[in-house]
Length: 208
Image 1: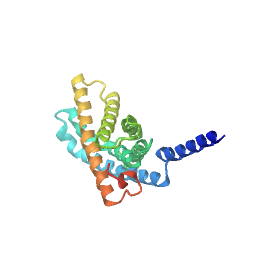
Image 2: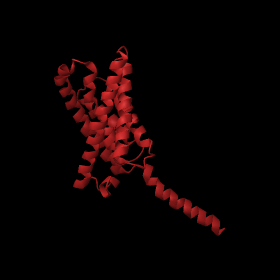
Image 3: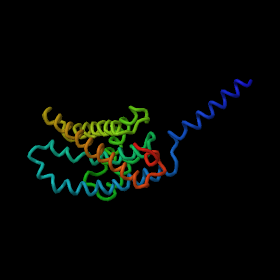
Image 4: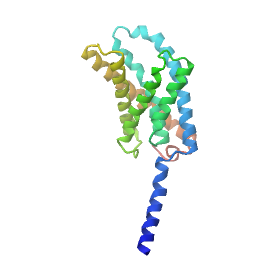
């Protein structure tokens, strides 16, 4: 009888210990929403920049992929801060929705992109079972996110491109994602953590 009670207590302690890893708190939802809304505005401004610099990149169409990394940032940053399944998808999809409300030139399809990009980033964090959030794990999430958005782009908009162009576009998107969403997101989260703005999260309580 005592053995059974001991087992039950052990199970209860294990449940209490593991539950916070997946259970969303109110603060998690609020901060993920803030990240999504903030990057929705960034997307809107980035799209305006794209219309300005786009003609300068027209000499080789795949080069435009160097701008794609920004669109992976909310997913990567959301995942790094919240550290729970679904955070990347939530932040990425909300950012896309906000950019649409602000006047995205891409129309409703941008919601699909936000979802796909979020899932791509989510896959990167899932590969570590949401247990590692260092620079290596961040870059992996950026890579899987970059692959997801480039495959969607090539399937929907550039299916007739030569293979070399497709490979260039995919490679440049991944590099852009690693540089802007991976390294950029990593340093931004570190800066926010150092400022004390993320004190309610593990990243604000100890080093990444």
